[in-house]
Structure formats: structure tokens, C-alpha cells
Amino acid sequence: MPKEIRREGVRRLVAEGAQLVEVLPSPEYEEDHLPGAIHVPLRKIDSQARDVLDPNRPVIVYCWDTV
Image (tube, rainbow, N blue to C red; front, side, top):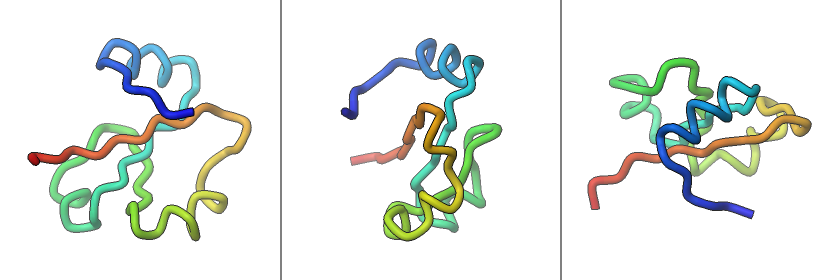
């Protein structure tokens, strides 16, 4: 079940082995992304997630939006 977490929580979970996934469009990801983030564009998450993510590890999904 999705829930919002703060920066400290992200750092702790990543240190414990969670996968950090950025769902930004490719141009935005290539311009700037979080260190160590896995790129899976939101529009392709259904088709790519199983190929790139370990189902036995927690997943943190990040998307920066200015709206």
C-alpha cells in the first residue's frame, strides 16, 4: 500500500536495501536524478517493473512534480 515518506525515511530504507525508482520521463531523468535511482518511466512501469525490480525488496517510487 503506497504511503508518503520523508527524506530521512528514504535514506533509511535505501540503506536497508530498498529499491529507489524514479518514474520521471526519460529526458528529465537524464537531466537530473537521485543517486542510485533505477529509471522506470511511469508510462512503462507495467511492462518494465517485473524485469528490473526485485520483488523481494521494498520499492520507493519517486516523481518530482512542480504542480
